[in-house]
Length: 388
Image 1 (cartoon, rainbow, N blue to C red):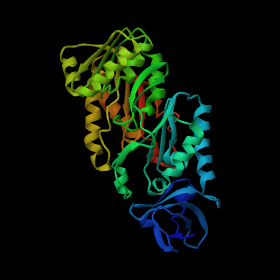
Image 2: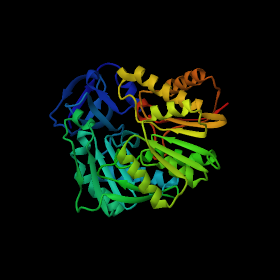
Image 3: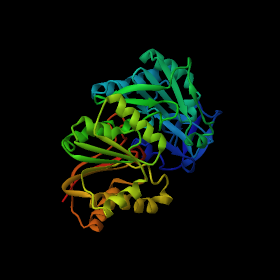
Image 4: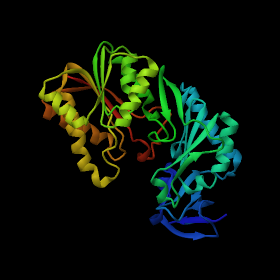
């Protein structure tokens, strides 16, 4: 087996559990290999560190699979996927959830989402992509799904030297499927929906709002498919307003409202920034405002501009919440660190001349675990704050 020899002292981060070897950390290569092969990673003095996928197309030259001297074969991947599934079942997931979360499940580049009887898959690393047929065989053995859809239409694949593509794996089926989440029914579009069809990473947070919305007037900003709005209605909100700028989002929200037979949800097509400004000008108030925007930054270079954007919408939201009401706010950008997110909220409350009392700090749902050694895997932040 070919080997990657590290520079002096570059193994420490790997031994602590970080799953990536970068190009500037490598001293030399030994042996013959092709992109996607499994190679040994060794220290400067030749000590075994681990095994992983190699890919010279990427700045991440090796993605670590294991720190053990073990065989990487069909049974290895089947056990890893089964272990990931067992965790999800143990913590209570049943109908729809993320089965595999890439590096966080020690399966670098593999995303597997379960939507009822259907599976969506992404192979985002070169090594995982060349093993896609094997991964699909394993998924069929474990789940016997009614259909599998490939959502390899994400730009990160280009950094791996992979083509962008999506489509059915095997027999075609209607890609718009119905799922149940916390007792709420949702139409999910595996072909054109966000991520692999839906934001499964908010499943636990959508359930958590039940403690704050009963008998309340709730504003759901950046509503998308209406997940939070629908949950607010299910959990007893007396009035819900769902706002999104996308016409497709408005249609999705209305379809999901009809699917559940909910009443009391008003759907508004508007730019959230403009909507909040207008509500402030008209002195309209809400009991609860839910703020779940798209990522305002996807790079370190744009964090400052993103900070200003997050601050503006949160300040505007805080101003229209009645005393004693709640702000439920999110950031899904990994570059917006928890500390920076809290700093932004503090500044927002100061500028709004209100006091925030943090009730909960939450992250992504339990089916999206984060490696403590890898900052990149902890990306979703949620603060539930009482506005005084």
